[in-house]
Amino acid sequence: MNQRRALNPLRLLHRPRWAEQQPTWADAKPGLIRAALRRAEERSAGGWYVLAGSREVRPGRAFGRVVAGRELVAWRDGSGGLHVGPGACPHLGAALCDAPVHDGHLVCRWHGLALGPDGRPGWRTLPAYDDGVLAWVRLDTPAADVPVLGPRPPVDRSVAAVATVIGRCEPEDVIANRLDPWHGAWLHPYSFAALRVLSAPPVDCPPAEDRFLVEVTFTVGSRFGVPVRAEFSCPDARTVTMEIVDGEGVGSVVETHATPLRPGQDGLPRTAVIEAVVAHSDRPGFVHARRVAGALRPLMGVTARRLWRDDIAYAERRYALRARA
Ligand code: FES
Ligand SMILES: [Fe+2]
Image (cartoon, rainbow, N blue to C red):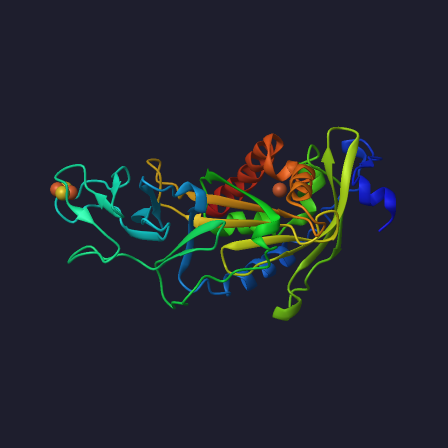
């Protein structure tokens, strides 16, 4: 790494006009994306679902969400431990999502029934796991003791941010969108430039080599960018992880988790896209990790909303086409 690069990761952008960039459709073979999705779907999540960002479950207040059709409530005990239980009170069914937390127990607002980590007859807590960035709950079998975690940089030298968007689609539509890296510079020119898919897994890819390697520049404003190489892989059926393997912020990851909720009033499915960005720098000092976080701003900040909106639209469109077929 040369001195200039060490000081400033920004590069001047040289790119053609949007319509004049190299089309990627011929490389983005539908069969290849489909095969990558099928292989991902065979990877068990061990019954675990991402419920929320860890920080969304705050001390002193309950957090409610319906996951895979099950109404759930999460809360923290006095030492910060995460607990998850059914979201309906076992007495007369009051919603527990806004129950105050007192002495490590949820207190039902209707008649004051206190519900703790040990549960009670008719109301059993579920296995929960807090990995420091995300809160997980286990709902299904086959059951693994802990969630399948992909690569992560060390938490103490990273900056993490979690954002959630909800789409009218199923988890596979979200995963299929992320397993099409070719759309990046076309659909998101405000965030990505000079995107090249350096390698894509073949249709009959062995599990150990099942990843996409992509060269891409994160744009910063209209004139600058941060070039990186990133690897996309699926640790489980509902997760795609992008890890920066070369360039600024090596080790930083963007994890996209697709959590099924329940159908909306329109009868269409709903999926929460819970995205964790964990920005990291090998250089000493938290301040530097913050600067990397700045370089990853397209994935963390204001432009991310546009990115997510366009990706959700892609996933929703994919779902609509499937539903029509
Ligand atoms: S409904 Fe919760 S205590 Fe009565
Ligand atoms: Fe995208």
